[in-house]
Length: 174
Image (cartoon, rainbow, N blue to C red; front, side, top):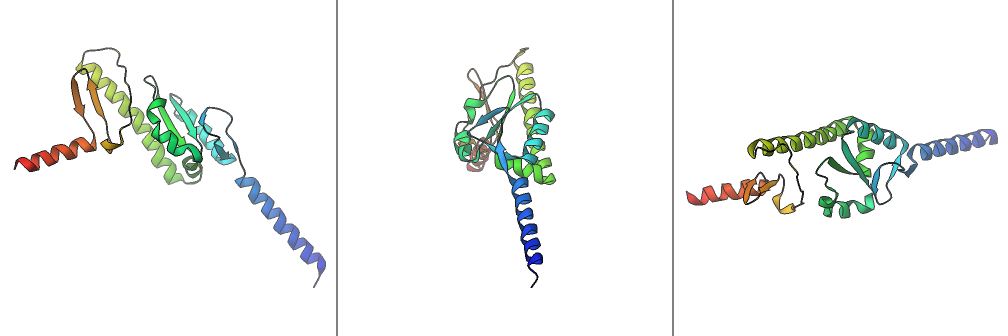
């Protein structure tokens, strides 16, 4: 066996390993709002910057994997009546940076949230003949999805839980 071939082969394997480590090495995100100590690969950091520029009228908060549950549980405290706030975790950003279909799906969700909030404001402004509408947010997992609008003593339920309750009530009346 030729020792030069073994040495060259070992060198190639080491160079490949170093290259893989460099491309997957993650570093701390140094700009923008964060919860925890989020770490992103270089590719994910570049994508995250593009995402923030694309939706520059929104406030993004990047959440580290170890703080994801805590951020979800306290989501309402990050809400802002003037801007849409996007809580997004590092795993999602990494996947969005790598997978175009996944990226399109979640960018669509972000875009839809912005549109929905504007529609709610416009609806309330028209209904109550106001020029400015201030919203307060509160997370309620029991709603399943959707939202409940409360203005004074008037309540409008646009949640899945509300729809299920109304359906059950109709079936009970029959």
